[in-house]
Image 1 (cartoon, rainbow, N blue to C red):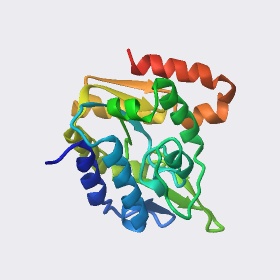
Image 2: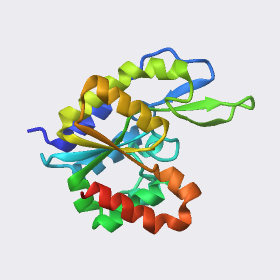
Image 3: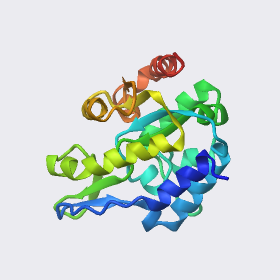
Image 4: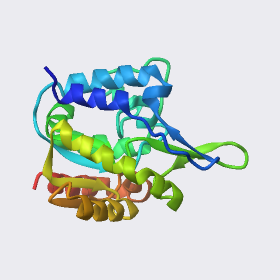
Length: 229
């Protein structure tokens, strides 16, 4: 019998972005590119989501190279995967700044088990993108950073959010990490597609770590208040 975790695993296995992109941009699909990502993320979802509880949905922007782009688990780098999640991705070590805030928030909520029983974290666009500079070096690229990419990704995003709803998430509220372009796009899309009754914007974890690190305890409290209201 299928449960929440098995439905997530099935979704990950079937993720496919078959849209032609500009030459300097490529899509990251860890589940197709790295068998270890599917293996470790499946272990994660079986460990924390092996039931049919309804979860509240939190959406980030799209996966980054050092977090979900490698582990297959949104906002979770290998460091947090090991501790506190208790899972190990062998021979790889990454540090994703956003995960620092996310796991402080999870700790404040009571830990990984109670948090993941209540919340499901994903992204507006479930696959990430990278752009190559003139030297061929790749860096993260957001789905909204270029209009042509946004237009190409929009049908994929709509399809993906409908798939999140089928997992067993609440339609009452959706929390959006990123109060700027991510929130603006998701909120407008929600008005058109009627996914949720309300979309609530929260400061993005990367923004907090980069610009408000000294106020992280305050940010954790503010978001905890929003999530438990």
